[in-house]
Image (cartoon, rainbow, N blue to C red; front, top):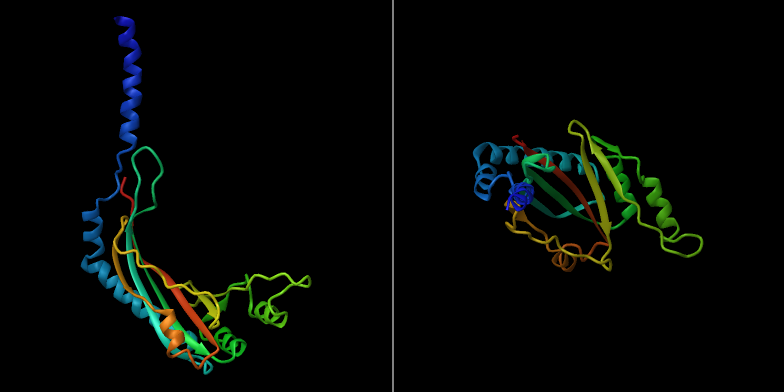
Length: 227
């Protein structure tokens, strides 16, 4: 009996440790939801929304080749997860705001040049406007006829360090609308203003050859993990 007793004790200790490691010390849904809806966090969201609007307006203020057709926004907060025995997210609650402006354009390269010269924007040297010009000069194909990847344009927004992404498409390009994730855990707050791309192409974009989208994604609240 004594031998069997000494065998069971280490086994029980390992089992207890494993079960404890499975218990999350992350915030509960109620706690995270309450913080996401608190006055200071909602005020931070409103303040960030105003700053984003100013940045997007400044970036396109002198772009005469762009016709505004829509805007979209999503304000989303999600809880961090983890436990006492393994790594966890860097945040206990993280909130961000995603905003986009949609424009119709008749001459794509002229419109992109105007954005490239926009106020307060510094090109991020991955793909450049010259890469875009070369891409279309070759009709998007390499010497062997294979398809080339479409360049991406992005810029750093002065004073904030945010990354402004620039995307574009034509009426026949594939498109899909951004899904609404609702409040599926760990999302605890979601206020969305989506855009129906099909409705845009059947409406205000019908007389334009291209859709150009400028977007920013900005984290406006991050609650650190509490040990």
